Length: 330
Image (cartoon, rainbow, N blue to C red; front, side, top):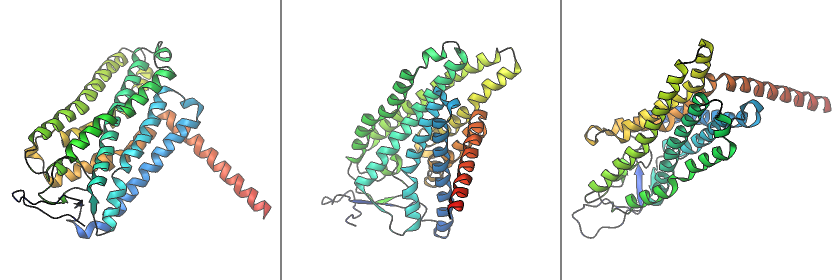
C-alpha cells in the first residue's frame, strides 16, 4: 500500500492511493456470523429478483406496464445491491480491506446512479398506478408500450451525467487526514470526512442534491397516492376497493422503507450523525430493505403468487419428466 497518513499542515504531502474500509472490524468476533447473514441476504436478493424477472417475462397474464416496471425494478435491485454486497462479503472474509481511490470512486458512482434510478423508477411505478386507478378507461392509451420504454430509459440514463460530475468533484479534493474509511463501502459522508481543507460548499451541494433527489420523487409519489386513495374511497363496492388497495400496497411499503432510510441517512443534521448508527442505517437501505422487497411483491400480490405457482409447477413437472426420461435411457 502506497498511502501515508499526513498532517494537513505539512507541505510535502504524497497523494493518497488507497483507502482502508474499516467496515465491521470493530467486532472481530462477529466476522464469521455477519458473513453468513449477509451472504444469505445477498442470495435471497439475487434469487428473489431473478424469479420476479423470469415470471413477469414468461407469464402472459403479467404482460402489463405495472409488471414491466416491476421487472425493471427487480433488475435494478440486483445491480444496486451488487455494488456494495460483494465487497462487504470479501472484507468480512479477508484481513486486507484496502481499496484504491479509483475503485472507491467507481463504487460511489454506481451506488449513486443506481440509488437515483431507484427513486425515479419508484416514482414511475406510482404514476402507473395513478393512471390505472384514476383513469382506467384511458390507461391502455396513456401507458402504451412506447411511453413505458421511454420512461424506463429516462430513469436509467438521467443520473449518469449528473453523478459523473458529482463523483469527480468529490474525488478531486485532496485527502490528507487519514486513509481509514469508517464504513463498509465508499459513501459520500465518510469520504468527505477524510478530505482536507474547507468542504462546506461541497457538503451543502451534497445536501441540496440529496434534497432534490429524495424529496421531489417522494412528494410526487405522495401526490399520486393522495389521488389514488381519494379515487379508491369513491368506488361503490368493497371488493373493488380491496382489489385497488392490494395493487398499491406492495409498492407503497417499498417506497416507505427505501425513502425513509435514505432520508434519515442523507437529510438528517450532520451533528446527529453517529458513525456506528450511520453504518447500520446504510445496511438497512443497501441490503436489508432489498432483501424484503421480493417477498413484499410476491406475498402481497395475488397475480404474482398465481404466476409463481404456475411457474414452479411447470418447472417441477419438467424436472420430473426429464428425470424419468434419463432413468429410462439408463
